[in-house]
Image (cartoon, rainbow, N blue to C red; front, side):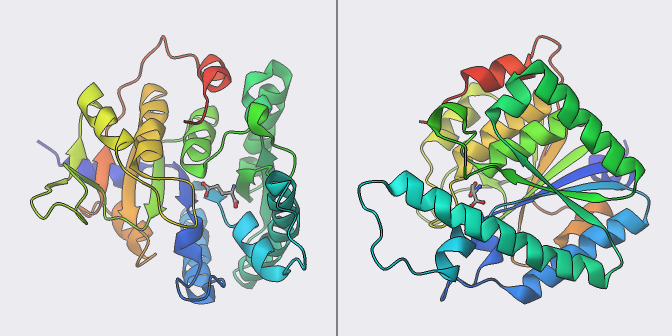
Amino acid sequence: MTDIREMMKDKKRIVIKIGSSSLQHAQTGDLDYTKLDVLVRELCDLRNQGKDVVLVTSGAIAVGRKAVTLQDEDKDNPIAVKQAYAAIGQARLMMTYQKIFAEYNQVAAQILMTKNTIVDNLNRFNARNTFAELFKLGVIPIVNENDTVATYEIEIGDNDTLSAIVASLIQADLLILLSDIDGLYTDDPRKNPDAEYIEVVEELTEELLEMGKASTGSESGTGGMNTKLQAAKIAGSMGVDMIIANSRDIKVIHRLLSGKKIGTLFLANPDENFDLPLYVQQMHRE
Ligand code: GLU
């Protein structure tokens, strides 16, 4: 039998998600330029191989918070403060990405989404066409949630879910979630030394989904194991394979795509009854 990891070599359209905690120095919260540089180089190299590449990046709020120190943070309206940080940070983050992409002669674009982008038929249609056009142009779209306008009713909330939605929308072949964990374990490895590492998930059982709910996220991002498993459910139902891998070394991207057994691979189980817009509409953060 051919190794399923060998199949990764044939993936043509790939979405890569990186979380805030993977982009910042843990000690200071400032951007880790070395990591950003390696990330962009890896993405550009995939593009040079003729693949369609999308980057889903967090960091807007974290970068905005670092850029300004509000004298009097409005404690009564923490959402407005976060949204202001996002407005500042998103532009800064893009400026940084654009600079590095330019070094590799690669054009990058920005797409900011909310729940409505998927739920509303015309918005979804437009978004899909925009992605298609960008791929034709050889451009790498950089996606984030439109945090400055996305209030609770229309927010997706975390970028694990957002990246799975994007991968589904554009019918990607593979979604890679780069995170501060090695992959999926049978229990939290930081708390339970007997926790076993799972290399491939062929079926996302209720048991696994329940296990994810008990886990917690990292400090700067919003995604824990729960959001990653929900992402696997969305992507898998829509026919997209997904890998969770550690962002400690960003070069893991090309290793994964050359078939190396790194991270946890979730094999897609397409479900023709899965209705993406309906699922997104009914989604709520817990
Ligand atoms: N969209 C948020 C940001 O860019 C982050 C969401 C997440 O960490 O999952 O700051």
